Amino acid sequence: MVKFILSLLALTLVSCTSTNERTPLFNGKDLSGWQGDEELWQVKDGVIVGSTFDKTIPSNRFLSWESDVENFELTFEAKVEGENNSGVMYRSQPHDKEKLRLKGNQCDIHPKPEYCAMLYSEATGRKIIAERGTKVKVPAETGEPQVLWKSPEVSAVDISKWQTYKIVAQGNKLQHYVNGELAMELTDNHKDIALRGILALQLHRGKPMKAYFKNIYLKNL
Image (cartoon, rainbow, N blue to C red; front, side, top):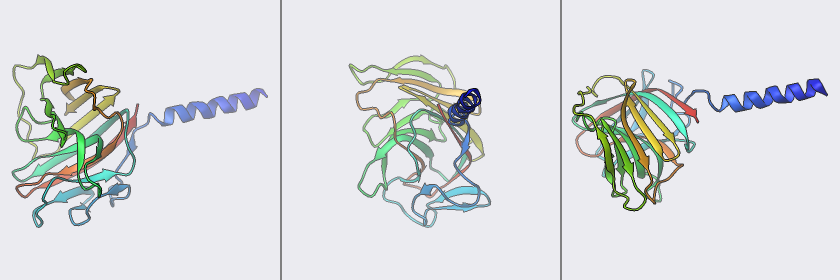
């Protein structure tokens, strides 16, 4: 009986700790586990590449991970080619029946220093919620962002080169990082926030662009 109890305890501990391990979401070979337009997204030289250089898109398009995310830590490396921007959606929701468009939280990959790793609310009408270098709170009463703290200066980030990003989401507290430095912190009490949803990579409409992603790891919290 004692051996059985110890074995059961060991299995329970393994089960509990396994959910906290970093899980690779990209195998470096193909788009297994991801869903999107194969004319826009492919794997080249061990990297996920999304391109609009040979195709015009009427609205932003996404490559979505197969499972929803809730409380998590996501790390990834990304770069953007062309005069445009990209981003990573999380806890997002379908914006049309075909799920070609998404709405919700986005960690922006943008050439403007104050926009790189900001929190942009895609297709919800909320738009920019927290720029890089800010700590922001959204009260439930008004639903409008309140800047609690703002850095006097933010340095430029060359998004045309590989940079490391991290997103931490736990309950209504959201944090974005660039190269290990906190970019923004948001406490979001908006009435329409989603605490669970789709994780996706973005191709932005407009000028031709390529978005590159690699070393994508998810840790459930």
